[in-house]
Image (tube, rainbow over all chains, first blue to last red; front, side, top):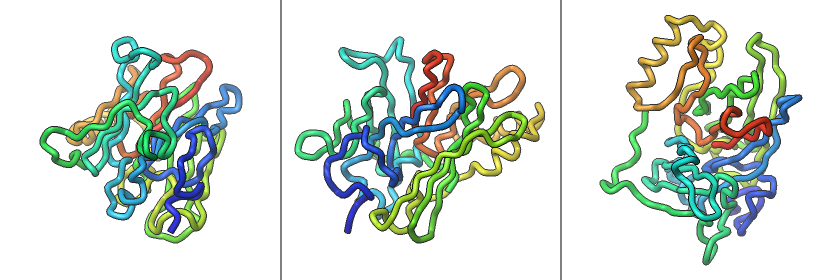
Length: 124
Length: 130
């Protein structure tokens, strides 16, 4: 069973992907036509397992902290997304991380963490 | 599958849509409309047999609200906007209203899709999603 349209293999976020469930996606807007084009994405290495048990990343939304406060060496801005798996992903806004691009085909993100209580992110 | 809120960028209002409980080819849509109701642009992805059952291209599983939000937006009045504020404050979601009560930045969390505001990133108009 393939996990995704581009195959269950490490993929750059810069390569177009159609199966964008469980993903953080960066779309560019053409300022004239308002048209959208896919620029970058991050999809967790656990995408397949998450999707099968409905622990949707998209359920938690995305936070874009003020880049004047939240930045670091080589990182101008971050984004944080938490989903029903009770895992939060901190990613580089300008290089979201693709799919399995990290060490040992893991997530190429700045940090992953779970809320201390291990409780799922509240849904509504 | 409508977890996305609305985002207004450079005068275009963007809303995202996906599918749920169906079979491929799954599709995900983002529609950009003008404040007068004209469709300016439509962006779509279509996932084939590589995608999972019940898997909307923009978000798998679960449910959410959003389509009706677009409709309400164009009917917007101060009263209506306030009622939406109250509704979403109960969900602990963050969003900002412009003075004219139009929804400028929605951060409702229905979808990881999230647009960067142009006033923070200049005229390049890149948006980030969530």
